[in-house]
Amino acid sequence: MASQQAKPMPASLQLFGGTIAGLVATIPMTIFMLIMHRILPKWQRYALPPEEITKEMAERVEVRQYMDKQQLLGASLVSHFGYGATMGTLYATLTRRIALPPAFKGILFGLIIWAFGYLGWLPLAGFSEAATREPMRRNVLMIAAHIIWGSATGLLADVLRRWM
Image: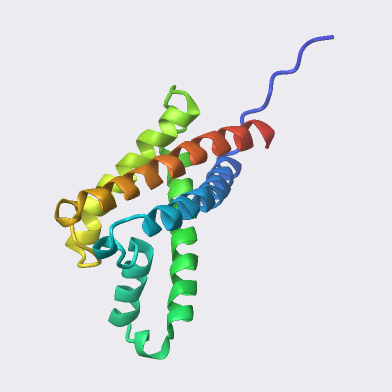
């Protein structure tokens, strides 16, 4: 009996796997961020970036005045997980043909997202201070969080790619 070769996975399924991987990888990232935020020096325990960005966006679209703290935190979580899922889709799109171990590929991608966001588009768009203006411990927290997200996304996307 001739051995059957696996059919290549349709691009849409691969993208869906990246979306799920990015969404799920946001869970350990968020837990890490919340735990580490508590051990920062008191003067550095201001809102984490998902809340800062969501608050700024709500102010820009003139709905912040209608949101209490719980609603702002809920919107922050939804936007944070949505961004993680979107970046997971982008991960599946851009890393498809890169021959590196999944965790390493994911870590590199997570670090690129951090740099592009915190050194690029977020400060340019006025959503947050540039990382160069943030305290070192907050930067280390956010870089580590993106390493966690990236490694989890890379591993999960690889498992889902082989499973689907």
